[in-house]
Image 1 (cartoon, rainbow over the protein chains, first blue to last red):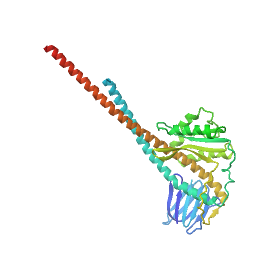
Image 2 (cartoon, each protein chain N blue to C red):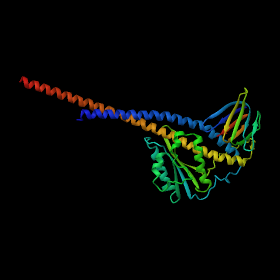
Image 3 (cartoon, rainbow over the protein chains, first blue to last red):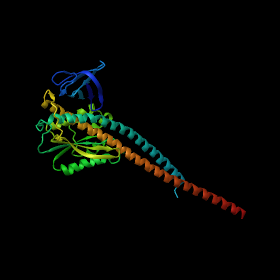
Length: 78
Length: 292
């Protein structure tokens, strides 16, 4: 699935990932391929990604919101 | 006839002024480029945020929100955004004029307070009754332009929004130069709070989203976020406008200096020619007198 992390200043990440774990407002949750459409808010924490080629990434965020729609994940982070 | 030495001095001074103005123009052009990039960078974020916000609020009554409190606006806060430096044409004067016209006309008879961002607006309002010195409010915000990122702007925006939430002010208006292009800036008075509902009919998205944790929670999280983005955008716009305005002003100044230099050169050459002619005349006349 395609994932983008956008902040007001720049684009932090854009690429295809296997899985992503987000610090949700009410507990952390993971997103895999073919996840149902969802909008969720994030709290202070770390976003963990695993790219298609198995490269892991970590992005600390102060908060934000995630939209999952048809294998497109867009993270608006702060 | 102008004195030769005087003209030479003026040529030197106009020449060095021209050098300064053309250097300032170059600097502004480079900074303008960076400011424009920042605006372009922020656009996808702002658009997506707006889209999600609309998506969530389409089926929800958002008028019951702390940020949407309406009623008679008695205490009004103007946030006047200017630049720290001058020599930018009418950039600062226009913003200050707009703020005064708001005070005198639209908000006449209401209590108006002002927060300034940028040294020029601060200079214009610091000795008036409108400027606030309260410690709970952000002040001395002139350094924000030295490092204009979302991280530095967000806390300021939060404090300003806080004054609305705790009912210190009933209405918050941003006065700033909106960036149209390098040559054109539009002075805007934009209402930050209470939130102006932007409903675009026809954009009803039929997607069934799962809302985590709940619609209400997401809305209450997103609205302040979008306000902060709006505030940040105003600052970015003002910053880009400043450099656009300065670039245009300095371009004109350089052109004027060029014209002046040309005129001065002509009058310098004329004066020199006259001096030579007089000298030859004197020599010839002297020789003639000896011969005669």
